[in-house]
Image (cartoon, rainbow, N blue to C red; front, side, top):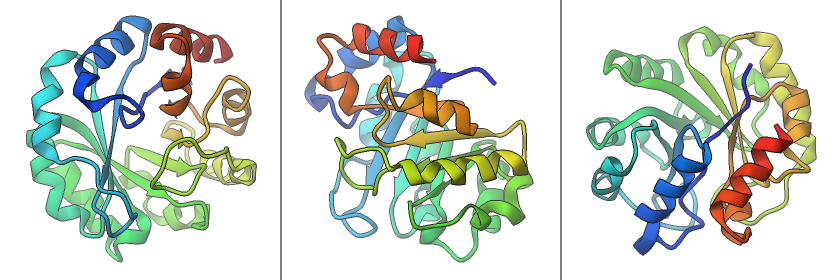
Length: 213
C-alpha cells in the first residue's frame, strides 16, 4: 500500500495554522490529522468542531478527527458537519465499538478505531471488517514530542495479518528513522507533528519523510 502522510496540526502555532496547512498540502501531505482532547480521556484540552470548521476551506485534502475523548459518539455529528471525512474513536473509550463504527458509516463517515499502547491488537479483531482504519498509538496519547515506542511494531504486524487492505495509521514519534520500521511492520499512513514543527521548514520536513517512505 502507498505510504501517505497525515500531519497533525497540534505542534504548530494554531494562530497561523492556515498557513501551515497550505504548506503541508503543497509539500505533498495527503490528509490533515486533528487531535481533539477533552481534558478527561487525556489531560490536555485542545480544540473543538468550530475550530475545525473555520479552517476547513484552506485545503481540499481530507480532514480526519482523532477523538481522544470519553464520549466520542456525542461528537460524531459535530465533526462530520465541520468537514471531517474520517473520525477515529478510542477502543478504550467505549464498550460498544461496533455500534460506534456502524453509526459513523451510517453517516457516510469513514470509521476509524484508535488503540493506546497498552491495548492489544486483539481489541479490533472482531470488528476489523466493519471499520475503515486502525490508528496505532506509538506514544502515550496527550502530548507531542514523545519517543516512538518500538514494542508497538508487533501490534502493527498483527493487525495487518487480520486485513490486507485496511489503513493502518501510526501516531507518535514518526521521523525519518522510525517511519521505515513502521512501514516494514505493515503501516501505510503516518501522523507527524513535532518532527515537522522542528524542521527548518514544513516543506523540508515533509520531503524528508516522503523520502523515508
